[in-house]
Image (cartoon, rainbow, N blue to C red; front, top):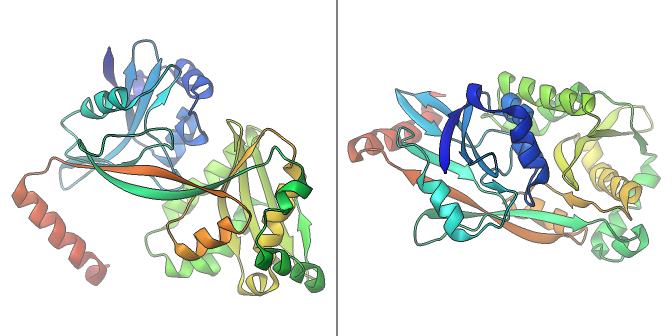
Length: 314
């Protein structure tokens, strides 16, 4: 039996055991992570937490909707038992009707029926770290191998004693200047995620410094459910020119090669980023974004007009 539970009625112990034991469990599904990244959420729960499906939601203009929170790549249905398309469809259809719009990313092992729902493919890249570093290095693109010589010439060095705030500030001062949809509240959520992961002992936070001891690049690597997730990074222009980011990722791979871990690049549909991730010998992994629209036609017209006007009024 599938039932919908508000956050206050969810048993955290049973919920987190389900995520930990699920064959498709991931960092984003744990209740503590959803509390930070999503804020308000509920879930579809089958029987005694055999399968769970988190639904992060909010309300705007009186309309309740389900959305994918920032810094949370994949959610969807988590299962401790056999999972097929029919079971997934049953859960999706059980999403309460009060949610008039649903736009969420399913996880890689959720395969929805294209005939039943509107699905948008999303791209991720993963690299198996079980092999030796030398074996993994053989899969690097020639251009990447060539660029990895730049950091040594530039005198870059790796540091593991770095605060999350410094990496976030580096991002804001550089790439963040062109990302209007991320605000102060979002960066505060990200800091809480980083510090909570540090407290739980699953964060690996590293930075790259230049000869002048200036931070050139930094990243949050989070280890959970046999994956090392490249959750967030910051990079200066000087760091970009010196090859600081490939140097940092290569260093992490070197440190963790030979372990039963999958390096998760945390995806990107951006062709340039996808090309960069692929240069490490990673494989493409497709997951699905599901879109359900239950809004009346007249409301849809208003929503579309609002989206078109948003860049003009923001």
